[in-house]
Image (cartoon, rainbow, N blue to C red; front, top):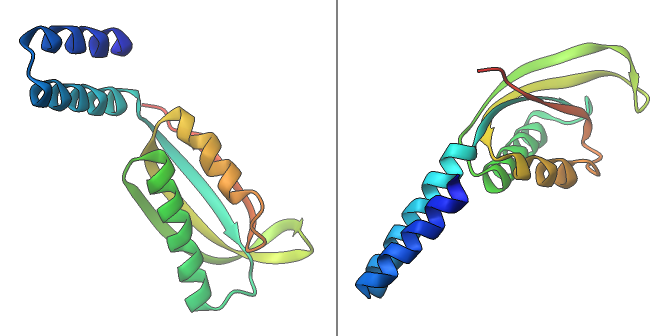
Length: 132
């Protein structure tokens, strides 16, 4: 449906022969398409327990920036503090839990996962699609 909307808008505006109007409408329809395809997600991250407050905040902000850049949506997060893990992860018994809520396109989720999976400061993370 959205691809058809973009094509129809481009065809309609080409008939009017105003390049500026065509660009504005096409950009607007692309924005509408992005908004329509966005979904709400929740993510839980466990950061390494040896991080001090300053480094932890920096890592939290880095993750937030990555989600904003790749997901193209608004991000809210809550630092839940240091907690004991149910079982050791990467030889650690504790970790800092941070919960993120954000809106993103489904294609951005794979980019977010790829950008985060090799970080040594993140013990584990999981991203869920939230129910409406």
